[in-house]
Length: 117
Length: 113
Image (tube, rainbow over all chains, first blue to last red; front, top):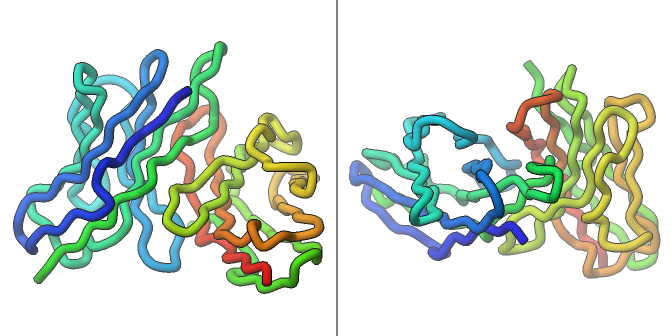
């Protein structure tokens, strides 16, 4: 079965420092990977996705993610964190069946990012 | 343009009651999804519509849960004989046909007492 793991429940970083939120995946076939952000009492907002092509994907709000096939990872990064980046971040992968990628997203358990001023 | 909207934003009901949750997708999006997010967890897939038909309902937990999308736009998730374990945030998402990105609404927070 396809899955994603977010090994850190919480990441703390000082404003202005680089941040990394980790995600590893387990899929059969080529993965379709996503990052979403969730602010309190709001739905998920799409940040970026990897389908194919360049391993470094750039997304919204200055975030980027690096797809690493050998390490089965898709870590989210930002060069300089802002206090306003504090939120819950979810990694997700499209489920696969015998027919290929389905339309079902499988989410990790989320990582709370706390940026201190 | 307008995003995905969901009503109500909060719903409190008693065990055993029937509830309906509504989702209005982004205009022109033919695909619609329902997910459920329990406290401290990531969203879990419930059902996916392509147009009016349910293309994948493998995530519905049992036959108390049902969803419809009669005109291929608005969808309603229906829960019969609610149980306390049904308490969660119910998220709806939509996407354009042939694209991978799902856009989520703000969710309906359901509390079953």
